[in-house]
Image 1 (spheres, rainbow, N blue to C red):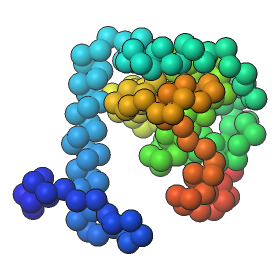
Image 2: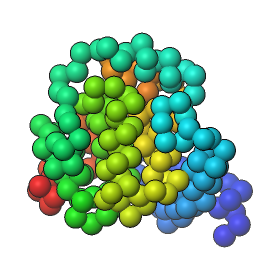
Image 3: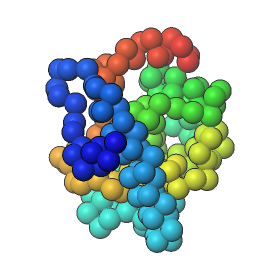
Image 4: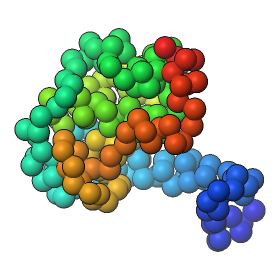
Length: 190
């Protein structure tokens, strides 16, 4: 319906999404996000490295590059889903086995690569390598834009400052538990 483009509505908190909510979410993903990703990669020669981030994100990540990391993993650990986090491992396993990963988990997956890598530059390299090798959208603007959104704040705004992430939007395991049955997801893919 043309009205979907004129009057987008969000689902009401506490109520299940309506058919209209689902259609609007689909349009957001296949039109708006796709165009953002295509334009980001076409017009930004640094679409696949930290220099593709906005100045606020670059500065914020540089300030926190020396922050202590509780865990640091090598590429081989990420690739084999050998981290301490069963949800992250499940997401990596899902991608390596099917070429897909749920969008919410994909954000978490990339953000944790930032948290568990020695630097943001290395995090982007690792995430791109894994995405390009295992994901159906490997080498596609959507993959690059998603990684850069998660790790470098592309198409986002500054958030509260925190260790490692700086002002990049943060996600954690507790947030996953509030969104869906993460234990069931882990059981399915680990």
